[in-house]
Length: 204
Image (cartoon, rainbow, N blue to C red; front, side):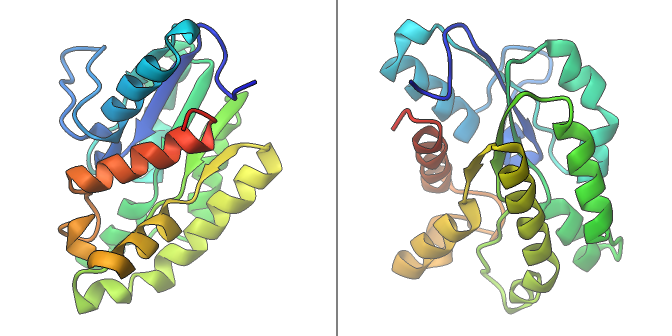
């Protein structure tokens, strides 16, 4: 039996990596990143499940911003499965704007939103450094990844180990193949993430 069940409403949410071109005037728009690929391949591989996918990623969101809109963009949609990718902007804003979010605050925000979810997919935030400065981000990002892993274990959630996945891929070909700026996936990067998501939920 797969993690996904017949007639599930699957909400994918987070920041720009999930948002990725969705039309916010169209509530059914999935964008053209990993969220859309996941929906397309899940539908092709298991049409019998009759799944509905929703995308509510918002570019630039931090964990606090996701928490602030959770009732409207998650609870009100009555999803049966929720997939969350959030955290890279909590790190990025420290380095480009001097706005820090502590690991404790990040964990508090994440726990506040996952507390409303029965079946949960957590995707690790990730960076694939393409500049020397981005290597320093690990100090800030690694503790957030540890939070995601810990919460996933406690909640028996599906964990998509995206940070290691992208690191391994970058070691083979170079970072720019997968994320041209180190954060936002290329088309290949979105494909890599979508395949990992599908494998994690049993639809590889």
